[in-house]
Length: 343
Image (cartoon, rainbow, N blue to C red):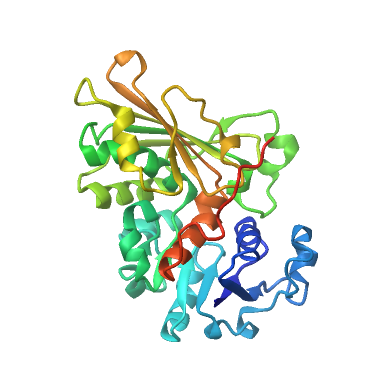
């Protein structure tokens, strides 16, 4: 059993981490931090955890994080890069759920995130935590950069096609929709029910910070330059991401179903659906699964991949727990054997 700490336990990803970790057979939650809510019982703040945890939030300074085996950062961008080094020096392993260590190109990172990186020496050492690509490196990593939610859904959907070299890597389209929890818990007028309910909109059409993460991730995985049009949308639901992905085929007569099934045959959290099956976010709600469907409509030379995940689980906290399991040599599914919440 290991001792873990969670830095930033009041947001949606922190809450989801707690939901998963309180039942994890190999974990003792030693500390949960929040500067603004220090002294408040974790279960008082998160009533769903009543009877599951008896800790109170503490400040990071009082949390004894250096005594943990692993610390999760469920914090805004810019926090982990200022605090991870001291923990790593103390022998603590770190998983950052924000974007501080996801991009290797610091110039690109600083342009998209609008700040100077405080720990550039750690960026190269960090392992991008997408198990389906980097499982071996994750196993020995000291610092893991947990992927973004959009990049997880898009990367898993496009990866088999790019690895096989059967599509034009310079003309990819990702039309992606997310529930409002993807925007975090911070109050915002645009996320009020009266503002986003019964509505549907694209946003950041001119450029979204997850686009360079997707492109860098795919480029590293397959060794070719990536041209991607990425358009995110906000839909009036709490959880879920649906990515409709389009690519131009460079070969005809391909068995795309067999290609995807072969790529993900041994992946515990990727489910390739039978041809023609409906693809719904509700089928993965509350789970660490990515479900995929692949089709070439009318045999017209364009492949359509549909990818669905729960943005708070496979897109955040669940993938972080999956990475933790790999890092400590446990069964990858430990604590993640979750059925979808339906209806």
